[in-house]
Image: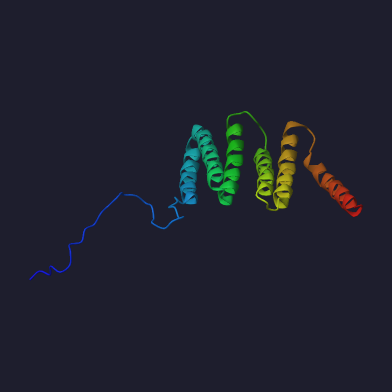
Length: 178
């Protein structure tokens, strides 16, 4: 015998998707996992084909730019830091592979410039900007000395240590005079 005391239940499907009902939470693709998959495939292709190496650099440059655009949209620190890292290193590899620049040190130099670019972004957000300036300056000095050495006959790297000591001394003297 059928129980007719309860009305029949109906199911209504509005749409199919990967969205949750919780407000404020969005389903996100794990970008790091996608990055690792692409990175592994492109490294394998780069070992087999020279053209694939330049194509891989261009693809990673595009990925870095996409991560920077994600930072603009979401203000995610992880997207900013990984985007700058990927963009700087991919740009260095792309320009070197295309023959636009030559020599070593370009990756460190571009990475230093990218880390230096983080400082005003952090300052605008009201946070401390000291570590990006220090790390970016060190990377720029390291990469710049390698680039200068590859373009000149002077080993600029040997002058880097004494130059850092002079700059440290100037900083200490100017700080105690205040």
